[in-house]
Image (cartoon, rainbow, N blue to C red):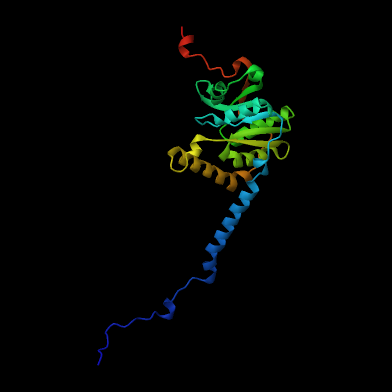
Length: 247
């Protein structure tokens, strides 16, 4: 005959049996759905079709966004459009590296300008710190000159965000076309340290734009970042070394 076990399962008392209310079970799912819907709608709203519109045969101005990259491929692509006659004037943007030297100063020096092409290249030296700053600066610049269409040259990976930013700033007052250029850092891929950093940074910038920045208003009355144009003999000129001016 089997001996009864001294251990018996203890059934919890009715008061000890707790379960989450049905409402609490659905809250995480609802929040997740709402969050995904917000991200999806924000991405759709930020997308601009102009990023992939074909270039016109001819426009007055091309504008090279400051790439701050070690290859200068953006300004090289801009020069191709200038040399081919797609744009009449090429504006190269650049912030200061230090000591009065701007990125634009370095990049225009690498252009094989021939004939009167030097007269058709301008440096936009500025203190901008973002694509939004540059978009506001150039929107005001082209407003003064009554320019209704411009080709913006930037890196291939940056086209989507740049098109969204420029469209928001101009609010339909101007037609922006976009021309992409390769970027050696980005093209390094996930296996390359610089390529990985470029992807993380661009991903963070895109989500910040989609989730927050695109919904903020853009003032047309607040001053843009300080900037100046260099042309002619000042184009690509590096400041003299300090020892040449020393007594």
